[in-house]
Picture (cartoon, helix red, strand yellow):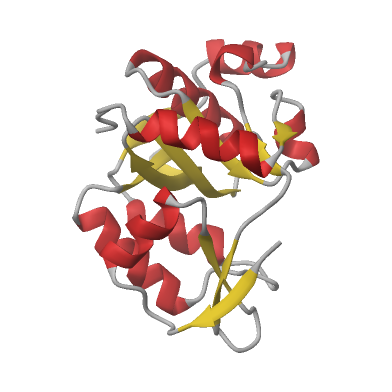
Length: 198
């Protein structure tokens, strides 16, 4: 993993350039100071190999949650940031809000009884979606949002879903590690596509 430090609020063009090179920002949970990272190996979720556990399939059929896109981006990113060791600083929140206003950062929201129950956000460039973070206040809400995300990406011709790392949570859906070299090849292919998320 490579790392170097930068200012706390990142201009949109800098963020976009970084993602196009396979680089992403994270802030120190204590100081808020932002550093840039790469990952080798890199976590990805192959869209065609995406696996939905049976219990989750049954839950989705019950329509416990309603799903929206880009209706509560700030609520979602702040929900993701509400952890004791969060890497999402206030500076990063403001950076991604700017990216969202320009149409590059998107959120998927899961609602239950009119209240935000969970969701996720990420960055869309070309045919790549860079998943940044997810959260839930109601069990399974973020998982349902992820299933919706993958369906939308497949429908709209995306070819790369970057998860950066493979957590146990993501592994159950088929996320896996690939080498940085392979990731950069997939990224280059994805960036040549012209996909629209919203």
